[in-house]
Amino acid sequence: MTSFSAALPKPGGDLASILLVDDEVAILDGLRRQLRKRFTVHTANSGAAALELLETTPVAVVVSDMRMPQMDGATFLAKVRATHPDVVRILLTGQADTQSAINAVNQGQIYRFLTKPCPPDVLLDEIGSAVEFNRLVTAEKELLRTTLRRTVEALIETLSLAQPAAFARAQRVTRTAAELASELEMEEPWEVEITAMLAHLGTVTLPPRLLEKLEAGRPLDEDEREMERRVPGFSRDLVAGIPRLESVAEAIGWHRARYDGTGAVGDVPRGEDLPIAARVLRVAVDFDAGMTQRPSVQDTIQALRADAGAHDPAVLDALSRIHNTEGAEPAPKALSIADLVPDMVVFDDVSTTDGLLLVGRGTVVTEALIRRLENFISQDRARDEVWVRG
View 1 (cartoon, one colour):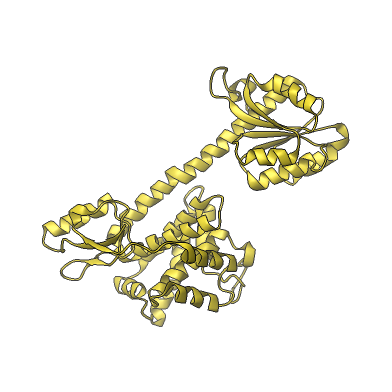
View 2 (view 1 turned 90 degrees about the vertical axis):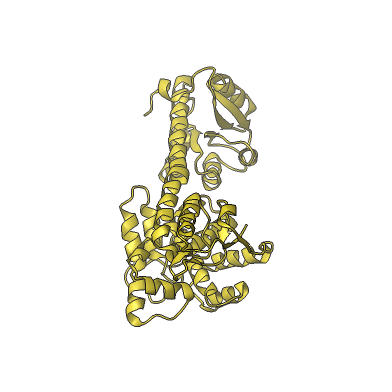
C-alpha cells in the first residue's frame, strides 16, 4: 500500500477531489470535517444525486455507504464503474453488510471496503492510497493517449515516405475509424486509432505492383490474394512485441473475422466477443476498399450492408449517421507547394514526371511531406501543384 505521507496531497498544494455519498447528513458533515484539510470534498445524499454530480464534477475517489434507500452502495458504485471507470471506488459497510461487500469486491466493482466505524487515520490513509492509484491509472492512460500515439504517428509518417500508396490508405482508414469511434462515443478512441494506423504495417511486405492494384481496386490473382491475406498476421506480429499494445495486436489479427463467425477456423471470437477495435477497423477498411470501386458513399454503405453478417450492425449504423449528417466537403483546390500547410488532405495522387507515386490521395499534409515534395520540385521531377481539401 502507498504510504499515508506519500499519497496524500501536501497542505497548500492542489487538493485531490473526492465524493462522499451517504443518506445521513450528519455522517456526511462529520466525514467532511475529517477530510477537508487534505481533499476537496464533495457530498451527495443519494446514489442518484451522486451520479448527477459526477456528470459535471471530476473526482478521483468516491466513498459510499452501503445501506442507502432506493440504491445501495454496491449498486451505486457499479454504476460509477460503468460510467466513470477511472474513478476509484471505496465502500463503507456495517458488519451485517460484510458478505455483500465481499461480493462487490469479487465482482471488481470497488477498490476497498471498510467496516464502520472506521478510524479517521485509516480512512485518510485508504483514501490517500486510492488517490495515488487514480493518479497512476490516469498517467498510464495519458501515456497511451499522447506519447505512444504520437510515436506511432511518427513511425507511420516515416513509412509513408517509402510506401506512399499503402500509407495513404492507412491514413484514410484511420480517419474513418476515428470518426466511428467518436460517433460510437467510445471511452478510449485512441486504441481504435492506433489499431487502424498499425494494421497496415504488414503492407511493407507487398510488391509495388500489388499495392497499385489494391489502391485502384483492381482484381488480384490467387498468388496476390494470398500475399494480401497474410498482411494482418504480419502487422499483428510486428505490434505484439510492443508493451501495452497487446490488445491492439489482438484487434489487428482479428479484424478480418466476420461478425457472425461464418468461415471462422479455430477459436475465433464472433459478435460482441470480437474486440470493438477489430469491428470498427473491419468497417473502416471495407468502406475504403469499396470507395475505390464506387463513386457514391451511400452505394458503398449499401454494399457493406448487403454482405449480411460480415460487419457489426451498430458500427454500420454509425457509418451511415456520419455520412448522413456531415456537411458537404469543401471543393478541392490546386495549390503550389509553398502554399501547403499541415493538416490539409491530399485530394489526388501526386506522382513524379516519370510516374513514381510520391503521395497517395487521402494523405494528411505534414512538414516532412512538404519537404519531400520541395526536394523533387527542385530537381524538376515533380510539378509544383497539389490538389488538396481543407
